[in-house]
Amino acid sequence: MRIFAAMRPLALILLLSPLFLFAQDKKEPININHADYLDYNKNYANADRLIGHVSMSQGNTTLSCDSAWFWKSENRMEAFGHAYLIQSGGITVSSDYMMYDGNSKTAFAQRNVRMSDGKMSLTTDVVQYDVTNKIASYVTGGKIVDGENTMTSRSGSYHTKTREYFFKGKIKLVNPEYTMESDTLNYNGNKKTAYFFGPTYIYSADNLLFCNYGWYNTQNNTCQFSKRAYILSKENRIDSDSFLYNRNTGIGRAFGNILLRDTIQKITIRGGKGVHHRFEKTTLITGDPIAFKEFEEDTVFIKAKFLFDKLDTATNKRTLAAYRDAKIFKPDVQGVADSLSYSLSDSVIRFFYDPILWNESNQTTGDTIYIFQKGRAMDKMDVLQNAMIIMKEDSLKYNQIKGKKLNALFADNKLYKVHVRGNGQSVYYAKEDTSDYMGVNYVECTNMIININDNKVKKVTFLVTPKGTFYPLDKFPEEKSKLRGFNWSIDKRPLRKEFLRK
Image (cartoon, rainbow, N blue to C red; front, side, top):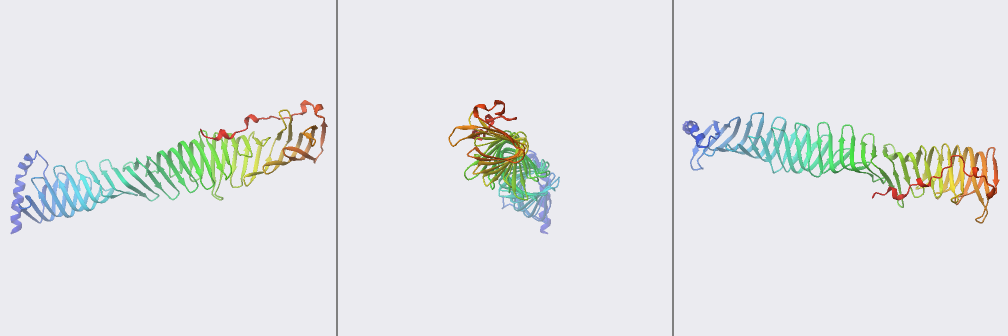
């Protein structure tokens, strides 16, 4: 009998609903659809008590629970136990407790909160949901799963109309291929793009990406980073003002104040622009690039219009190539060429197309030159075509060695022996034990070996069909004083200051 008595207040409520709407400035009322038991309790702030399979609705929003208190005059309710809010469009909010304000159309859910729109799911302890604008907000920590992406943060909001997420505080986005951590992040579920506005780290098995501002498309794995970003891998670290990066292709483009560092092999490259290939382990740097390798006591500098860095995964050693107007500065040797390469696996420096090298007061030219190092010192040098070594005596006198090819040996970074192979020619000024010159030797010989001490020719061994003349100094013909191809280019010799940034 009591349940029928309980229905009388319900009938009265439904009967008076139009009057209630008018009194509330036509606010849309919350309607009671069903309850196993309903009672009016005037001692509890004029609230209705609904128990068992409770169902209430407002427009296209339905609320259900195990039990509820309903304040009709205030157009609000409190739901307890298996509370559900269901809105058209597939939006659901569930919790152990929920308070719903029908005037502001706002739901406040607490304990074991779960929200879904069919594409994403949100779990948290407390959420506020704006029914009209379809916005869910939380401030006590939450987790959102959207496809392959799982996002957690201290606070956040989700706009179901635009599928936009706004996160703040200890944000973590986990994808099968990487993990992203940030402090402020927006995520667009339709575009599958995350936008970050503070320090952000993206971790993967291959590298770490960092920036202070940028975006990341989680669907095609493309991203843009700015405000001093960097990519850190097992092999190196690349810093730049901004990056464009495609994780699928492994190609990254860097712009502004590029700094590439290999901390193990102590190589650093600076430049204005760069292209990095993660899978090929290569980096191309342009924009007035400069590279330098540090040793304990000195530094090697290289510059050109283009610098190309490649890692050999078999040896874990790098090769640095310089193209167009290449220059190198070492304390023991300086050089210019159209291009050069420096292999750290065998410590060989190769110069191509019109190279010129200087060692002490010696100048070496040829079509191609190889320098072999032992430790940090020069060990030997091969000049493969059109070889010539010029050793300056004074402003008017130059010892010269020329041949089709030549091999030079060094000790303590000093030239001590030259082996000429093919079309050999030499001009050297012979001295007595004093500083006086005895005369000049002009020799042509297919092959020859020249021994040098303290930058002076001490002995020449002629191996095949030698032909030579010894001239007194005052009788030496001017036309023979400089071999064909002689070009003393000391003005092109690089100086250390050219490689130092202002």
